[in-house]
Image 1 (tube, rainbow, N blue to C red):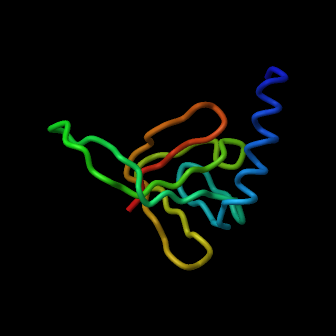
Image 2 (image 1 turned 60 degrees about the vertical axis):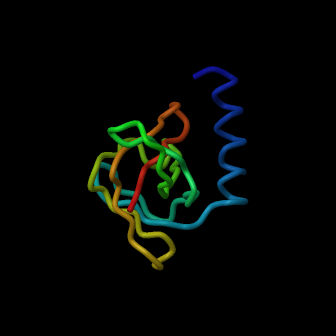
Length: 99
């Protein structure tokens, strides 16, 4: 990886530490006590190209190298979310549509 990638990874971990919640991830990857960021107001488009609001959870790829539909994310033992779709993956973090 490049120096830029290293800097992004360091800054990203700080952002997650400030805004994140502890979670356990089970499925394509397994990880315990990782930081995740929940966004309850993300816009996606349905099959008819109509906008709709969904909940997403972002995870760091360093913590969760692989994700797929049906994976489970237990956020702070408060609620278990199920991955519906991978929306974004920039190589550093992955945004997951959850319900």
